[in-house]
Length: 375
Image (cartoon, rainbow, N blue to C red):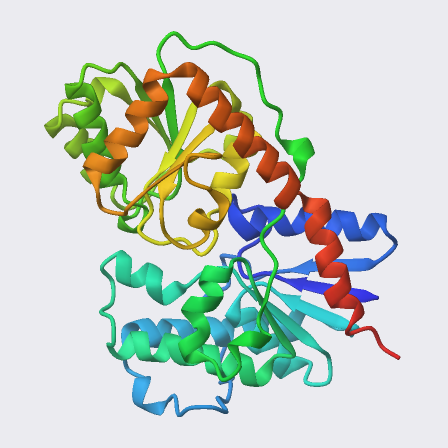
């Protein structure tokens, strides 16, 4: 089969789907399948003029809203770039973003278009304080789920919890297949080490949705208990200055290292002890599987795909979101007991190897792709 993997972000972007799909491409190429990647370069902004029609709702009442207009312009830009750059046909198009799926079905109406929805843009905007639940932008963005269900030939997502999240906006949510993200084990090499002081690490974009303010408050409580640690924060984002100010306010600045953006954090993670990220929502949370493959003990919130990766007190610890005291208690358990920490990390590594290996995901995707094979 000749398959196009249609991304939104260019494949060189770090994290999540953008870094995962090239590995999928390589595996299918090794099996003799023709697979290509396509994405919208960052420089393409404001080029498109051709509007896409919507079939399940009237987009007219939403125009004039800044968030909606930006989304519609991005759709037109992606359409312009697709018409300009793609001159051949494919047996199947696997889109990894709603914009890519809507455009590809417009350009290739007779080609099966499969969509994996990896995350929720509207939920991210709400948690980051950009839009209100039930507002105009929220109505438009959630309305897209029905549009995608109507136009695409199949929908996948990365966790059962995210399928449940989408269910109210779909006519047949039971048709959505769950295939979690997969990771090439060769990228992750656990390193034997003994840190005299427990080393905590978090890797994410610095935005409110990740709950990093909660993490700092939990660390302040941990410090008050007299427990030594160092917290390493890898990532950048709009609230970095706020987090640095909060660290100073909580008397934590000497206990935290802010690294900023890092292209390949998985090369850095194996030298630490505990991965912690108290997200307020996650469709999957790829970084938890990556940390597990680096043999780190895991602490996360009982939300979305995190709760599907972590079995509480078996391969990590789960805490409620927005609860610094509970997060402090979980960190205290791991910081205080190296043997317990080691056992959690080993169990996390075992589960990640078994459930989130790239080969397992390739097998699942191959079955789905085969169902679209031309007669």
